[in-house]
Amino acid sequence: MKVVADRYQVIRELGRGGMGVVWLAEDRVIGRQVALKELRTSSPAERERVLREARTAGRLNSPSVVTVHDVVVEEGTAYIVMELVSAPTLADLMPLPADRVAAIGLAVLDALDTAHAAGIVHRDVKPGNVMVLPNGQVKLADFGIARAMDDPRLTANGGVMGSPGYMAPELFAGQPPAPPSDMWALGATLFEAVEGRSPFERATTAATVHAVLNERPVPTHLAGPLSEVVLGLLVQAPATRFTAQQARAGLQRAASADAETVVFPKADDGRDVRKIALVGGGVAAVLALTAAFVLLPDDDPGERAVASTPSPVSSTSAPASSSPAPSSSAPPSSSTTTTTRSTPPAPPRIVPLARFKGQDNWSYTGSSLLDVPMGYAPDKALGMVLTQQEGGTRPLYSCQVKDSPGRMTSLSATCETQRVYGVVGYVYESQPPADKPSQELFRCKAGDRHFDSNEKHCDGQQLEFSLGWVLVDREQ
Image (cartoon, rainbow, N blue to C red):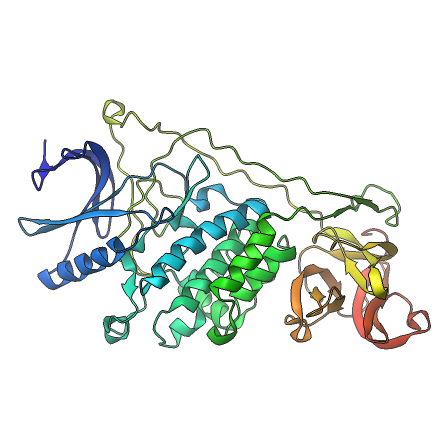
C-alpha cells in the first residue's frame, strides 16, 4: 500500500478532478485519517504556485475553516494534507429557514474575518464550499484559490478565478479581489440558501456575467433582517457594500429573530381576504442531520467527496467525479448515505395584500411573502398580488425608512434610498383584461408618513402616484 513521505498511508480514492486525486489516508505519526490531495500540475512553476497557495491557506487558524495540515513534495509530485470533513454542503441542504441560514452565515463570516485579518481573500465563497456538520458546526472549504492580498499575481496573469455566479461585479472590471468581493459572494450564497436558486447564475457564462453586472436580484422568500443583510451585501459599488461588521450585526438579529407573523388565507379557499389574523411568535424549522457524509465541494454543488481545501478553481474547470470504493475500505467513522434534496411546495400564484397600522400613524403594506414587522396590526385589505413576475407586471417593494420604525411601499428597487425590506409581490403596470377583476393601488401621504390605498382621494390625504393594479379577491 502506497505511503507518502514515509508518513501518510493511502487507504482508498475518494474523488478526482482536473487538479488531481483526493485520497483517504492514515497519518501514521499522529494516528488520524486525513484527506490527501495529489496534485496534477503541468510544470514545476505551476506546482510551486499551487503549493504557495496551499501554504497561504495553511496560515489560517479557525474552527470555521477546513484546515491544511501539511504540504509535501515527493519524487516531483506535490501533496496537500487536509482535515477530513464528513458533512454535507450547504448546496445539498438548501433551501433552509432564514434563522438557520443566518447562523450559517455568521460561521462563514467568522472564517472570512480570520482570512481577511491574515491578509487573505477566499475568492470562491459559494454553497458548495460551505460544509454543514451534523453537530451544527460550519466550515468554509476550498481556500485553494485563496491568495494573499499583497500577492502581485492577483492581477499579473490577467485571469479571473472563481465561480462567475458568485463573483462581484468589480472583478469582471479587472479590479483585484478584496474583502468586499468576498462579502458579495457571501450575499449571493445566503440568497441562494433561502431562495433555493442562485441570484445570478444563468444558462451560459456570458448570461451569468451580464446578470451580475446589470440585474438586481428580486427575493420572494427573504424578509426582515436577513433580507437587509443580503441586499446590502449585493450592492454593486464595493465602497457602499455592507462590511463584515454590518453583516454580522444583521445576521445576529436574523439568527435570533422571533418576529410576529400574519396568517393569510389561501388565495383559492373562498374566504374573504379581510379575514387576517395576527399571531405572535414564529415557528423555526429545525433540520436534523442524522447521517455522516464524505464530500468534496467543487464546481458542481451536487458532487460528493471529501472537503478539500487548496485547489485552484477556474470558471472553466471540469467538475470532479467521485470514484466508488469497496465498502470494506470505508472509514469506520462515517457511513455512506445518499441524500435527496427536498423540493419545497410551490407558492400560490396570488396572495392577499393588506395594509397594517403601526405606532405614530406609520403604515405597512404586506403579503404572506414577508413577515409583518413588530408593532403593526391589520387595518385594511387592498386586493391580491402575484407571487411571481409575469408579463405586464412589476415588483412592489416594501421599504424601511432609515433611522425610524417607519415603512413605505415603492416601485424602486433601491427603495428611493431607503432600506429594502423585500418584495411584497407583483402588480400589473396597467389595468389587466376584464376577465381579471382588478382595482388600482395608490401611494398616499399624510404629513411625512406614506400609506397605500385603493381610493384615489387617499382618504382625504395627499395622492402621490399610482403603484399599479391589483386583483380583486381571487384570480378569475
